[in-house]
Length: 93
Image (cartoon, rainbow, N blue to C red):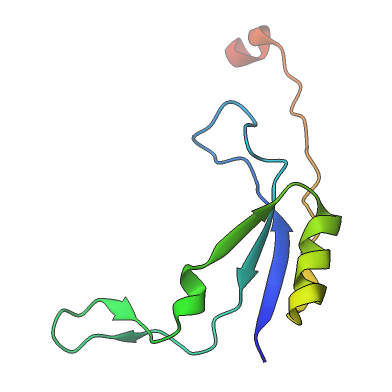
């Protein structure tokens, strides 16, 4: 049986805004380990579910989909936002 994890997207370190961080993603756990291809040396596996990533507007919608489709899942809690408050003058201390 396939297992999946449901998580909320985090802000990329290269982003200044928070666009699309409110989406909840459903992503399948890898069923088999990746192995190097003997010809090219690239890592790959026969598990095509790793290529699938579904987005949902809410956590409830993602869990409802997983339950409706019979997918075992676990929810990864969203990390708390930590604000680093500092003044411009702190750069010159």
